[in-house]
Image 1 (tube, rainbow, N blue to C red):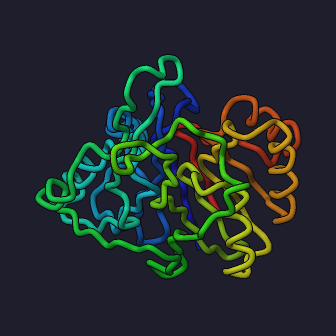
Image 2 (image 1 turned 90 degrees about the vertical axis):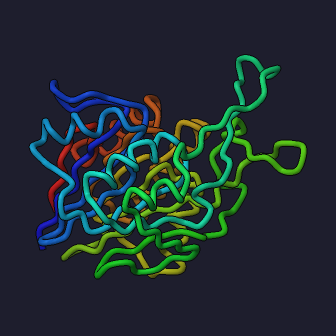
Length: 279
């Protein structure tokens, strides 16, 4: 089985010609199937696809990791390009996600959720499939969500809030989802932002799905919101899965990426825009 995973959107670029943008999007091409995981904020996707000489025609499904703007901003354009397409997401994807300005806490939190309504996207051609628990959504492809994370293993990102009555509380981002892609060998874990906590996600796939080895981890790990000692713990956790490739991007953070690179050496790559991973 030949699988290509191409990073279409990331904060950084792999080489000249691409543009970087705070967000994430990944294209999976698996024999005769084509899937998109997240859509970035919306500016870079079109150009980076053109540079790669790729398009979104015959797109089988779009998977959404969660409802933040930097993962959903290109969704309407994607739907328009693909025509009628199934969008797989957690039912809370349209939650009122907010962020607090830590530089000026006197300002009210601002909205950072999806800028499109469900109705607007459906008029453009989307058909939504909402999933609140882990399920195989295509042969060999699992939508991993609803994992009930351990609060002690969540990223320390107190900026993220959600309205509750007349006040704001910490956003649990219950719509967080990842993908698990089976290969001829061990599976690949693809993370959008890992808001459920990379430790929680890895514990979940081991305890509930029987996964003890991973061929690769790709995407945003949110390690920039963990303490430095926790990055060391993440390295040990990755090693528990005898991982062949760590390809991180977006919310991993520079310092965490440096530590991962130092440890994994040739098994490490930045999953920057334009990067192509073949399995």
